[in-house]
Image 1 (tube, chains in turn green, yellow):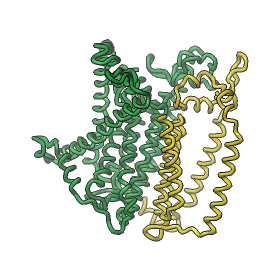
Image 2: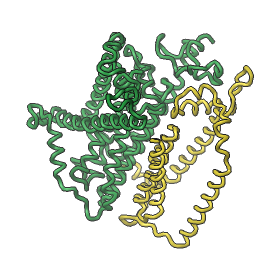
Image 3: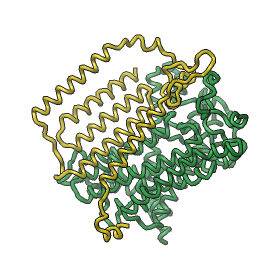
Image 4: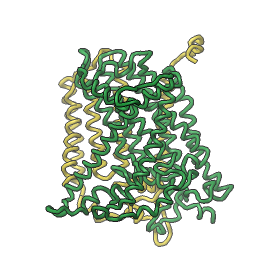
Length: 424
Length: 201
């Protein structure tokens, strides 16, 4: 509806574009150029986020430990510290141990980075600002993020070092185990949303803050915190980072890595931190909406300056979407800040405690939450005669639109609107 | 045109990855080639508009099965890098089985009348309304009995076909039973020594 540059998508914008000398573009070129633009934007986001987060991590760590943190590179606050680190890492020798399986050893960091980057393809930053809008977006992003563990296993196995092997084993066991409660907690808001499309879930939470899915019922409220704990563990952050505890143990699966390949693992880790926080923001915290209904007052602004510079580009619409993207990134960064804060505050768990937390506590908790989220609308429907506490909250599930008269009533009544249920 | 190029690219990657699995002798490299092959199959699913299937392929085969395989190798390997040497007899047997499977596939594909495929499509409007690639809703409706291959209504009354929900539940309960059984068999047997119990608690 309101895509990037106010066209439905970049490709639609390009196909409507009339070039002064060549006429309109052929569909092949439109697709290629649009794909290129999306890829370049996403790669830049993917590269700049870790740059910022590593600086933030150092600064926050410094402040929590009553130090100053980086102060010299790039002015008073050490803004360019990460860039200096990066230059240092590029200069380092690209070592591979003699005992390593070189070929796998060199490929492993790329596997981790690709898996982490691929998650950004389906992550929307604002209303319609998404590279690929899929109806199975949430499922795809969980599937893609589960692939990061492959790079870690390969890195640990091919290093030819027992430290790397043990680290990779623990890391992989942890990441694979924590995927289960993470997916179960992500299911809780999805039961209410009735869709796996990130865009629709985001639009559903427009308006005031009580429309956010975290405040929908008690189960989603608890599910947010459970999700955040499991997400922190699945991106192997403290207090769940025993497998790569740099300060106390050998650094785990990346013991033998140096230079740029080593930094790829950290790029993947920090980008994944943003990705899981972004999923939390979209599923629980209202996506790109401010929660104080600024969007409604800005709705009139959307039509401001239509066909600005090029036909199909509405400046007002673009600016409103840009504002939404800023809100989204700000919320996600706030969650990343909490992850950093927790890392420098809490002590590490032992590896058996990490696994116990997951299998004996988080999995049962998330199962109960999932069951409760399913039973909650039934309870409300039998007592209050509607499926939500608030009168004007979004209805449970999407109502099938279009030629739906042919199929309604559905056999289970799952997709029927609350008005219908109230009438019954 | 673009779809064709991408199709041939990913099809070549599927075949190349599969060949890599057969040719290489290092198990972990085999796992890498397997990832390439399975991942490309999932890319083909995405290309053909079966998004859910593609994502499931990634989650189950690439993210699940291959991880389990490498785990198994890491836990059971006696040396640093495990090698598999296949004998000539094994190779011959494998070639025979593969050839037979290929024959079955070729005969079944050539036996299908592909021109009939699009003419007998009785897709209900609810499903047809969704844009290409968004297969999630039709899949969910098929679970409940609104299947795309059967007409939903008979005259004026709604008459859903048998859904896939019950078979799916039966299969998943079976899987759960197998997992619980495996965990029971593989559990650490600490009961004999109670002093260890208090240490690990």
